Image 1: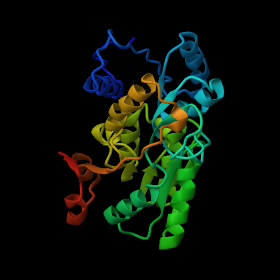
Image 2: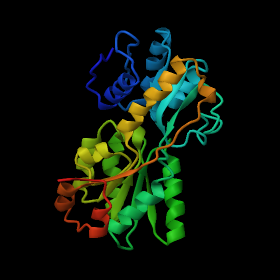
Image 3: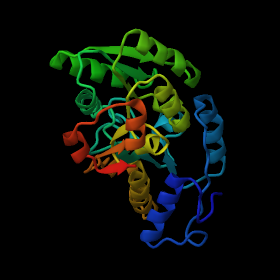
Image 4: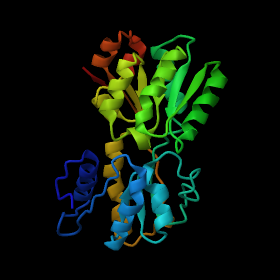
Length: 287
């Protein structure tokens, strides 16, 4: 159990959300936390463990949803953010999920063209932009490629199958004279944001990420939903389910706000000149 004050910022946000709804930890509920630490092959065992405990609700990261859907069709699952829950087959539709999964869709793939545009504002050259993605996240590459075609830009695919392949992918980007990279391989890289930020900096490649914790860890720039807030809001779904609501009938929600976060220290280290217009639209600037 993580306890009432978990160190993980996301689980902490969930517990805070439950507290805001009137739930007292240890009196009304307890948590059982499991993490795969970036190793998808561990999900089956972790999920089997939770099912054996007969938990009432599972709050899940996007990377675990495929394994969860295969493991159970009865225990309610609240997702804290999925790239494309309809396209990936987790729910029938956003309005009526139709199964045992509901929660939050972060529109991660849909925001890829916007991230590409932000990078082009930062590095306005004709040089190509690299797109780092994994097999599950192939939709990111397809979205970036489509957006580039429409705008007359060039993007290059940098697919990786494990985190250890990132250095080679970045070398391929520099060999192709890429001006910057979009980093999307969440399942593989989200557990090591600091290392990812270090590698892109060493490659002298400006990078944009999906979540701000990469920027907090030294990354250059991120654009996306507030993931901490998504975990806090997951408590609303948990509350409804515990009160008798069925996930099949709880509409999947989408963020109403997206944030642009820029790390000025990394900007200076890379020797990039950030346009005043881009700086002015940032929701937060890390000095």
